[in-house]
Length: 326
Image 1 (cartoon, one colour):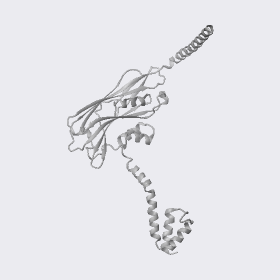
Image 2 (cartoon, helix red, strand yellow; image 1 turned 30 degrees about the horizontal axis):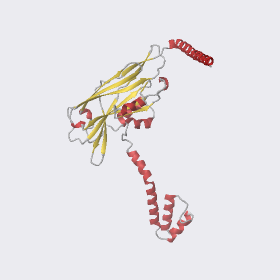
Image 3 (cartoon, helix red, strand yellow; image 1 turned 60 degrees about the horizontal axis):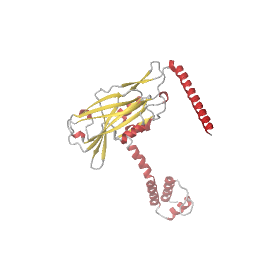
């Protein structure tokens, strides 16, 4: 076999690996006879190789495209964290929010918006009992307007980290979303509403609130809004003091702006450095005392027994009255 046709045969067999079908003949015999009968072995090899490359190009392209966009922020900031770690650990979450997110990397706007914006957050718990509202009053002022900034639309993103003893109802949040209280909201983590505190895990609520278009182009533009997040306490473990202290960490705040450019829109994410007034909050949740558990068990048993007896007696009385009428 000439060197030229032998080289073509080797390349084709190496890059394809198929052993069947070429005009109804076995691959080796068909290819050998075809290559030996023509002097165009190398062009045939090149055509086959290009065809195979075109077949697998979409797969490789999708992989490359996914890897190139892995650092971008999707619809929710916490979505990429939850897909990577699947559980909330303070060290991992803090590292993700401060280091892994592509924040302050927009070349269209100043990298440090804290020199342009003055932000303050008043954070408190409203209500009494086991059903409260976490109120966040956000105020920020455009201290210095940005010149020649493109058309943009921004929103505030608030990330609330909830401990295991506290949860928010996703269905309640969905209702508030339909009422336009938020522009978007979702819950990551444990959303089981019936679990007690000792069996539940932590959760994170991400709230989006639109602040309007072109806010960075106006000087001395004071914006303020309040976000009330409904919270509910889970059944806490027994405690002799009668209360369990649950600590709520200060929220993380971001500003996300969609900047209009000629070819496409660019999304820029910035992390706020607050003025430090948003200290952690403590929620005192009522808990049962272990010393009262025996008395409560006896009273509960007697109440259940009396309820069953009353049902049986009332049923018998009705049956007798029905027989007398017959």
